[in-house]
Length: 88
Image 1: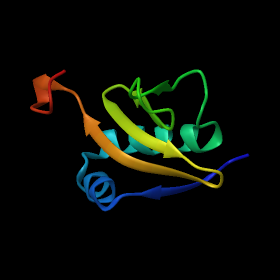
Image 2 (image 1 turned 120 degrees about the vertical axis):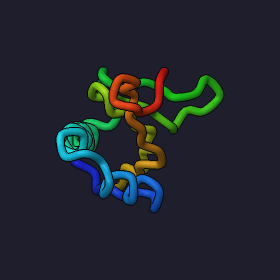
Image 3 (image 1 turned 60 degrees about the vertical axis):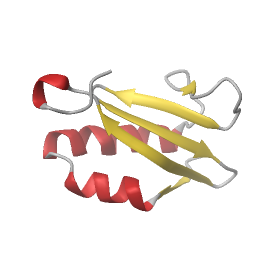
């Protein structure tokens, strides 16, 4: 079942200001997660939390929460030090 997608204000603003190529990767990642939010290509983000998951499509990374009907994206980031983005 494909769930509806919601973004926190922070993620929505970040999405709007992402470089175009990264935004395309972000939107592909969002579509993939909406189709299968607990798929093999996602991980639990924290050992003490069973609902917050993380997934990435290089270099875009997201944290999200899965509910019955929604996937809520709570954090998004780009990790690409040569271009001046956050370094892991």
